[in-house]
Length: 196
Ligand SMILES: CC(C)(COP(=O)(O)OP(=O)(O)OC[C@H]1O[C@@H](n2cnc3c(N)ncnc32)[C@H](O)[C@@H]1OP(=O)(O)O)[C@@H](O)C(=O)NCCC(=O)NCCS
Image (cartoon, rainbow, N blue to C red):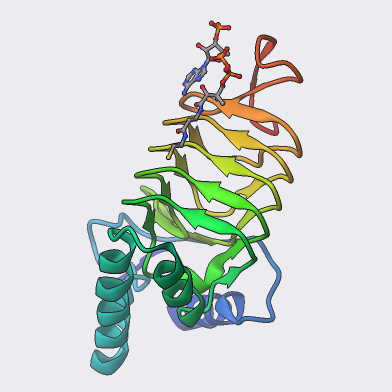
């Protein structure tokens, strides 16, 4: 159990953050070390609730492995994600099955093979949950990782295998781990971390 917070109050704050009408991007809660029980694992709730998350997660993860884009989008919408038109998910994209409704993908977005999108993370001393937004026209390269709470701007590109922990501004290209921005022409690399 967490030794760094009032757990019932923190869980109530998380419940409000997860509500569909909440627009906050990030939820951050100090906790004890996650090797011990923090009270924020999905299996800390009731058994029916835990089973629901587990079954939904198994279905989502399985469908995402298949080469049928329309079915993937339908399952994601059924999980509560907001998905625009002309969205394409390549094979093997992994979408965090714990809070999939925190995902928004606008129109004309492609996510490359094996990319991973996270909506929650445990750190050494805190728990985070975050909404991920892919704006219209954005492009995520294969094997990229999007951390919880990031926004990929309109017409922005995330390179193959980039690890993105901060927003990528509209029209920019982010490369590397941790991701940094190529300004304008992709030949002109800025050494600043993404959206610093
Ligand atoms: C990011 C990307 C679009 C850039 O393409 P580009 O405009 O042709 O840029 P270049 O290849 O000229 O590279 C520009 C610079 O970025 C670097 N770079 C490009 N891709 C990179 C990557 N994935 N990781 C790290 N650095 C990268 C290059 O090394 C180069 O640096 P340099 O100028 O110091 O040599 C492209 O490399 C990429 O990652 N495409 C994604 C493809 C993909 O995964 N598609 C999905 C298929 S399902």
